[in-house]
Image (cartoon, rainbow, N blue to C red; front, side, top):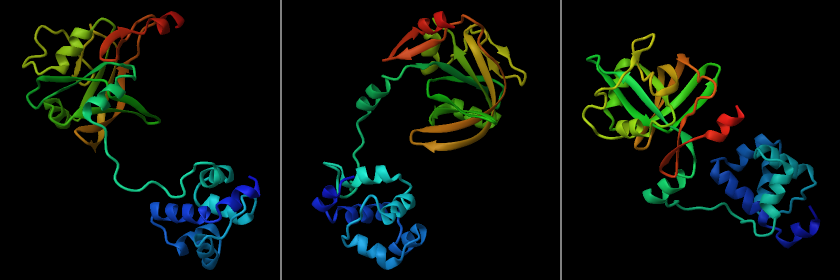
Length: 256
């Protein structure tokens, strides 16, 4: 980084450092100890002393902030970089905008199933699902906290993620609705632990034991450890959801 950029904004480094310390709630003394610097030196920087990006001081500050020297130099001295971190509360987008943004992300479609305290099957459509860990094998699903399936899942402590096959959009809509009997005339088989597996409508399933749940706004994030299931057979097609419509991932099938 040329020295000229430093001389043009001699106090920018101090302002940036002050903002970062405020973000992480660290005192100058605490930061000095982490950076291996004297407290007086840190105060000199905060007051506006210049810091050459090629100096040992600059490197110590970058390391203590968890940044590379280049990243710190860019953040502080690049043209148009803010001297201070943005402050003030952020305003969230409205629901319509949020849903429109999220609809740009294509995903598979699943039905999460379990049994309630009377042994009756419960289930709901879920696209907010992803793998979390391979060792141990964990996945997470996000469930509307108003759903009766969530209560049943908590009681059972186990659930099945049914990955729907292509062409099962009607079934997805059924389990996304408030129909009183979503299971009418629907075939399913019990898994090893007796939970509902929609064997005629899925290309794969994962049977899970509930490990934890975490608050996620109007949803609950449920983590499950996979201890059973069946992978997809070659050539099978998943039901896909994109821009509020269903489809199949045919190109991927051809390349398999």
